[in-house]
Length: 181
Image 1: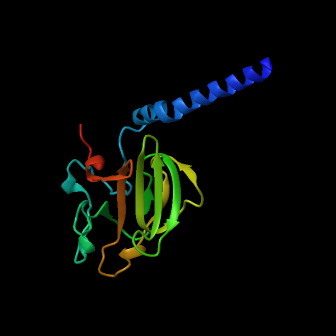
Image 2: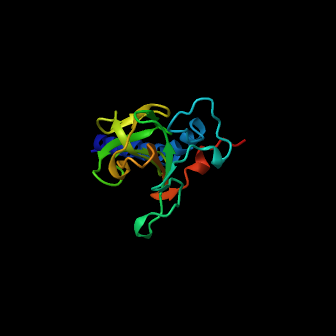
Image 3: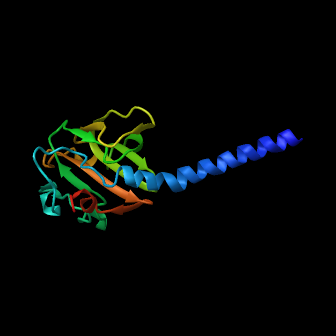
C-alpha cells in the first residue's frame, strides 16, 4: 500500500508541475522568445513603422482594414494584406496549426493556437501545407495566398485575410505588425 501511495503522489506531483509549466510558465517564456507577431507575408525592402505602411487591400468590393463594414451590418474581424497569388504565407508566431477548407467565408484556412490564449487565422489561401494538427515555428511557411472562399471574385484584389485573437476576441492585427521602438 505504501508503494502505491508513493507512486500516486509522485504521479500527482508530476502532473501539477506539468500543468504549471504549460499554463503559467509557458506563456511567459513564449513572450520572451517571440515578443512580437511577425508579418505573415513578405514585402521586399519594406519596414512597417506606421499602420498606413501596411499593404492593406482596397478595391471596389470594400476595404480590408480591421473593423471595416461588411454585408449584414457585420464588421471585418481581420486585416486583408494584399499579395500576389501563390505568394508564401508565414506563421506569425509559433503554435499548434490546423488546416480547414470552408467553401464560403474564409475558404482555405489555417488556424494557429499559440500559448497564453492567442490565436492567428490565415484565410483565402490557395493551398495549405499543414496536413494534420502540427506544431509550426514563427516564420515557417504554412500556405500560399489565394482566392478561396468569398474572395473568389475577379474584382477582389488577391490577399491574405489575417486575424489575431486573444481569448477568441478579434484584435486589430495592424497594431501588432508595425515595428515600434
